[in-house]
View 1 (cartoon, chains in turn cyan, green):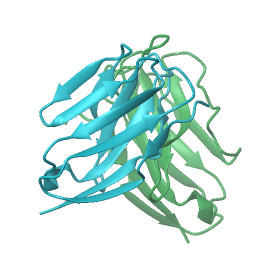
View 2 (cartoon, rainbow over the protein chains, first blue to last red; view 1 turned 30 degrees about the horizontal axis):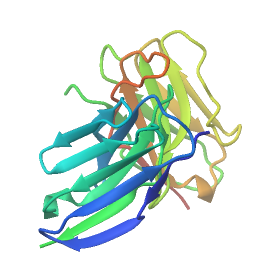
View 3 (cartoon, chains in turn red, brown; view 1 turned 180 degrees about the vertical axis):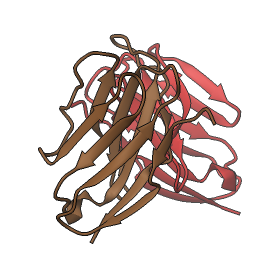
View 4 (cartoon, each protein chain N blue to C red; view 1 turned 90 degrees about the vertical axis):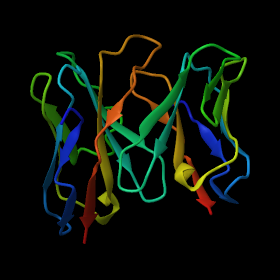
Length: 108
Length: 117
């Protein structure tokens, strides 16, 4: 099993602040996905990154895949309460290897 | 609806009883996955079905856990002689057929919350 470590585990910020969460592994992944999960629901895919060094933007969210394809980061600009949720990274395999997630709380 | 559905949404059972959890994947998705999510934790892979291939059961935590899938449709996860540590949310996901080194987007159901008392 390829382990993915996410940090921080918990993050509580105020609306309008910026934040970055990290996903790290000692293994190389051919692709990596970020999901967001809200309470009582299943995770929903935000983005898939495939190429080392790749940067993808989704509105206020910026995702980066490390050059060596072992790590990734998610940066949120001007966080909003609607961004609250559990952010999970998952590395490729026929079944996804999930990290434990970063629980984000954005308060008004 | 076109999404993944799971039933029941909640299940409370007594220790030692057997439970069956059901998953209806998206039509046309040949790959189906079961995951377990303990409170405040990430997702733990349990089992994977891909078309008519033998399922990958490497994530099942004990022989009390089993799963079946009928063709490319419904799947059932069975837990026998439930224990309190089995309490968790059980998530099912489906996707298009996978290929080596790439995982298509997985679409998750809302999960079944299992509580063993």
